[in-house]
Amino acid sequence: MTQEFVRIFGTIEPPAKYETLTLGPVGFKLQDGAVRHICVGDVEILRNISFVVRDRNWGTISPKLHETGRVIRDTMIEVTFLAEYRNAGAVILVDLALTVTSNNLTFLAKGRANGDFETNRAGFSVLHPAHLAGSPVHIKHSDGTDTQAVFPDLIDPWRPFMDISKMSHDYDGLFVELALSGDTFETEDQRQWGDASFKTYNRSLDLPWPYVIAHESGIEQSVTLSWRSGGSGHHRKPVETQSGHRRFPQTALVITAQEATRLAAMPECLDHIKPQRLLCTIDGSIDDMAIQIEQIAALQSKMPNCFYDLELIFPFKESVKHELQGVSDAITRTGLTVASVLICPEVDRHSTPPGSPWPDCPPLEDIHKTAAHLFAGIPRGGGMVSFFPELNRKRPPLTHLDFVTHGLCPIVHAADDLSVMETLENISHITRSARAIIADRAYRIGSCTIAMRQNPYGAETIENPHAGRVAMAHDDPRHRGDFGAAYAIGLAVALSHAGATVWTPAAVFGPRGIDKDWPISSVIAALATEAEQPIHKATRQDGIATLHVGKTRLRANLLDRPQDGLGIYGWAIDTVTE
Image 1 (cartoon, rainbow, N blue to C red):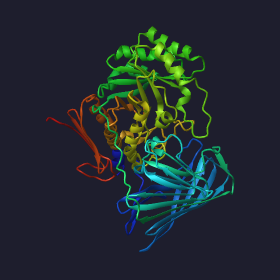
Image 2: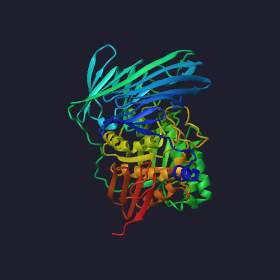
Image 3: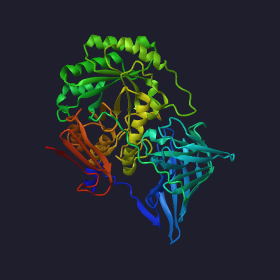
Image 4: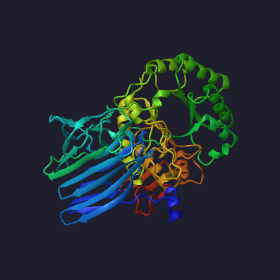
């Protein structure tokens, strides 16, 4: 079994177990103390309810969990847990009690801190499925007032609903009500981070964080979900981005200037992939940018057949013109042939959450106007080297730009296998919302590996020394197994409708790289050969992703059980001759 885990997941750690419980027409999954996929008949009314504790970097603290009791009757299911959360020597012990009947679900939490416990958030998190986008919702606030609202259609950059005590909406013939107590709750559009959900969570982001739950302080919260037939029948179909562009994008791989020296010494490392482009990170916060340009130029002299896109991250400690001029001069001096430049202020690699002051930064209009003069004749880009939330919250001026970009990451909030694959459902929401921002500019997808390249939400990405499934980790072992290959095919299918001209599914080196023995390398190599070829078919149905582009057909099983001739997270690549 150990060898099978390594082949599929790149690690000996087994996948998280879950069980499916039913009570008449009601069904749900129970996984690690969380309630997932709550359905009435075939209608999913809620995606998840869980008690979540975050550290100061917004990393999820995994609890030590014990099931302490279970009663299953014809009319009721009761399950209780004890969850132990540890952080820097302090502990929170939380008793969780779940009760389910034929028309009601209640989740109670009672906890107490042992030691002063530092956290950014500790409490219930409720996920509403992304298919509610565009649906009307009724909000009751803590002061008794009411608001009629709508789950946002395009992704909301901030918080669509505030100060929530109750939420109710109709969906597919059901009236659904959610009641919350024990803290202030609000909703954010979690689709922008990649999750296929809206999230209602405790403690307003307007309050300071991190904060401390004092020694022997208590926590008591509840979530009550109820439903009944007789809703309006409102039922939105899953969103799929439509675009006139139906050719597969060019493939890029990320490389740093320091890694360029390594690749120049062994250019055969890319013989099995043959990407069209190298996304070259020039980071002024870690080294002299002119020196980094020289390292990229030395690589280009050994490997002249790629397009070299420069991802220029500027500290802007001096004048905008002075810093941009320095890079422009270095490009001229070294003779580097540049395919494009993406200009991003270093401060924009970090998220600015609601209620936080915007960091000092020259106006983007001034930055890109100056760049248009100094890099005339070179395609110029804006956007973010991080993820869509940062682009959505700080939108670049388009006047001087040829393309706009952002990255993707499926483990911002959760890292279990099911959650990672669920993020593929949400790609169309992100790309459609991005298209609304960038208008007719070309669209490029930056780094989109499972593991997090950088952490905009904390000081650093999370270490993963035991090769586990860790949210916000810089190294995810699944990238190296069949799971990574299946995910890449699923992502390619999801992006095929977006009209992107470039995608960046891996780095050259490191844990997010393209070792020729890793399954994902075969997938990326196959898709690289079909760059700009017509997409004949791109579907995801019943957990099977299928992509027929050019003369290549790729299939992937996105589920944790064998189906359609493919094993668990299995995949296949075929040449189509007709």
